[in-house]
Image (cartoon, rainbow, N blue to C red; front, side, top):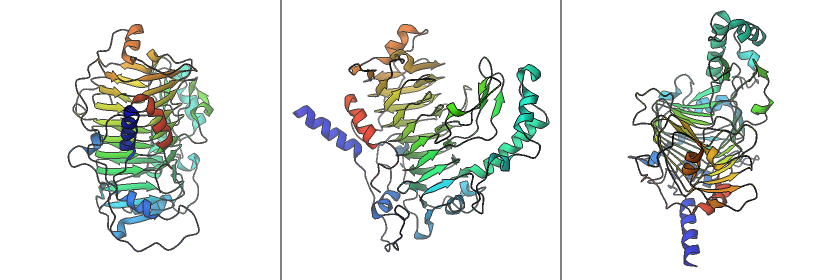
Amino acid sequence: MRRRTAAAATLAAALTLTIAAPAPAAPAAPRPSPGSEPTLAAKLIGRQALAANDGWAAEGAGITGGATATADRVRVVRTRAELVAALGGDNTTNATDATPKIVYVAGTIDGFEGPDGTPLGCADLADPEYSLPAYLAAYDPAVWGRVNPSGPLEAARVRSVATQTAQTQINVGSNTTIVGLRGAKLTGLTLMIDRVANVIVRNLEFSDARDCFPAWSPTDGDTGNWNSQYDQISVRRSEHVWVDHNTFTDGDNPDDAQPLYFGRPWQVHDGSLDVTHTASLVTASWNRFVGRDKLMLIGSSNTVGPDVGRLRVTVRHNLFDGDLQRLPRVRFGQVDVHENHYRLGGAGFEYALGVGVQSAIHAENNFFTLADDVDPADLIHDWGGTALTERGSWVRRGDRLPRPVDLRAAYNAVHDPDLGGDAGWTPTLRAAPPLPTPLVPLAVDAWAGAGRLPL
């Protein structure tokens, strides 16, 4: 009985929200559409700060987002144009707007929505000198060879990418909180958090951040690959970012429905939540990642340089559901991966934890629900790293009973060289004691993702 009581107390502590009281505000006028205006609970959550010690984002001064926003910088937005206006008014300069702001998203906002609300397609964003049939004819490896594309058609593709970036990449400034109201969705766009600090993104569904103009990389892998430009959330050169209770999917445009060109999949999607280019102090909590391929890349490249000492990220209480790789893949950073639920397996699955150059992953109390075709040894991939700390992992494979598993030992038994067991650091920024691993799926499946906050 004592152990059950302690476990229940730990679970309650992990789910507790610390909510700062908002400034008094006049009640909103009634609206007929449910979820179109902030409830009192939504107003409280809009001004909520990250709890003390809650992962790397809480380091130092912590993170408050737009909690101190004045009434004129609290907006409800329903269109791309309104979103840009609420973030500062001009998408080309919004990243420099550090005035505290709270943005509530109502309904669905489409990055491919023109200024007048007209839906745009890839053809509307293409440079006049670009066409996919001409591109495929020019750079077919049988004709062009295995060298990078160059010349007028590649230049036209690059100009097309620039046009799409201006349309679908939404720039976010410092001291910002973005909260989705009930059923809110951002589709076909990237939230770009670059060279800023103190940003909170919560309770949103991110869907289909598609690239109209993927790049052909003939030397990527044995036979070349198409690569996409756009993440759903991209954190670059920024600090103190909290991404919480969001859902990430490809919507009705899954990767397995894309055509093959040059014998390789036409890759229109990149990451869900990438932390790169010296970014640091990020907490990703209670998110749901469903059916995605390249999920979470931490670290831009293998080049030793400014990323050293950066890329400190906490990944906790997330559900990785049917995803294929980068859960996460880490270079250089001290990354605390704890109490996540992984439901993995099926066609295309590659690995969960990517141990990259000078990475320092601390993986603790993660639960892995695996299809029969996934062996525990497959959950780690060595991308040039040397060690990770891993403990408290449990695995349920197929219809077998769940059991504790030493993932690193399973990996080392079938791979060379072995990975060491000490990543060189011990996490201290945790707001609650870890849940016992068998309880992780119960908590995470119930609470992770958009629509779980009490809005």
